[in-house]
Length: 351
Figure 1 (tube, rainbow, N blue to C red):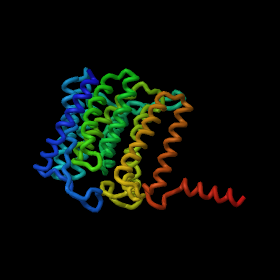
Figure 2: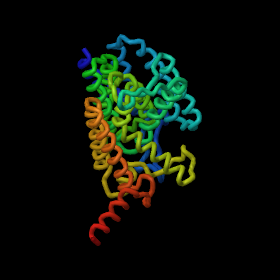
Figure 3: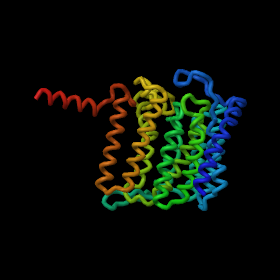
Figure 4: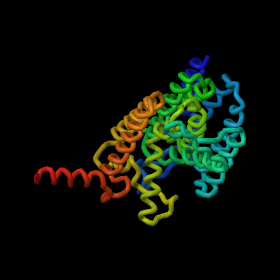
């Protein structure tokens, strides 16, 4: 039944997206080109509404037997309303943060929270009063991280699809039917929307879509890895390495340059790759490849021994740092590892 619902959601997204496109144009939910953005003409946005409608159809068909189903839908309604209003009227960052907080609070109130973190060598770090703040921060952080990578045609929805496919696969192996069902429903919805969003895009998913995908993925990541015994939150962190690292280094970049954290810039990962000479499609496919690599690392991590897990963590951190330095994600001069390698290479040649 899940696989039939997946197909229904896919077809629903394919059918609904053109209607949402017409609606977006009619109500003025459009994205104007500017110096920071890549597109050169006025584009309809709010395409995430099509993803959401297809998702709701799937949820109504399946209605997973879980106490988390209704809170997830209620929270997603808050996110969708906020996203639609933002795509129409460009809400202030403060208004969006408040809305995201209440949507996250709905989830926490349903009983979902990070109460402890597993550590190596059978250690457990109990979070106590930090549990709720950390859970809220996780949900709000991932919700906004997906939004920050939504800068090229098909980028955020494609990366989200890779993440959802991985979550669905891992949850199926762990017997987590709720997470598998919701992941499959949302995956069908995103894949049905992707043909309209890939370059050259006919519609953007807008903040409606990026916030919605980030919100659902953040919750599924919390629920999907209960049986992982090592470094409990590390699996979803590795899986979401692309949006998380892009967001983290955007914060660092703005702090270094003494700019407001909410100030937009043109130095995200996709911007940097475009400056290297890659086309839009090449950049998107390249980031898809990075996401797939991190997804594979998350799968291996979830089944590895302690030593294997440590090696995977070190490897992932090294890859991220090399990418950051190579493309200039912090700044053109930030290259500590690459500069150290060059110095060692020079010393070896002298000898």
